[in-house]
Length: 156
Image (cartoon, rainbow, N blue to C red):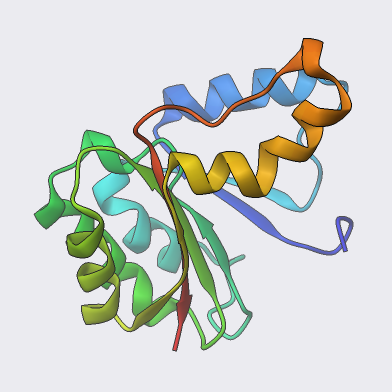
């Protein structure tokens, strides 16, 4: 699936350049199925829709990781609402945040046509994703960041 999954990196030119450097440092480089779409975060839906390589009929996974806390809740809702029509049923958005009330985030996704499929706080993230690894190797104790929530929302 890695070889056929099309990935669109929509971000500022500066962040796209930084990400390309990270790929190169890992020995990966940007592959032919990873497309860079330069745009301001609030304009990312429009930039994605205008990109001839993007297909609105394909199920989409959208990452807003490290994005939400730099926005107001109103701007975040605008972004999710503009992404929603581009995403067919079953598409997902994943996001982390610390600046908003969890109930407000769930309500925002609901208004934009998404179901909060999984919504985890730091303790739940620790238990679900880091505890088993910490038990295997206590010296390499990984932990979820304090005060951060994660949501996986599915288009319904």
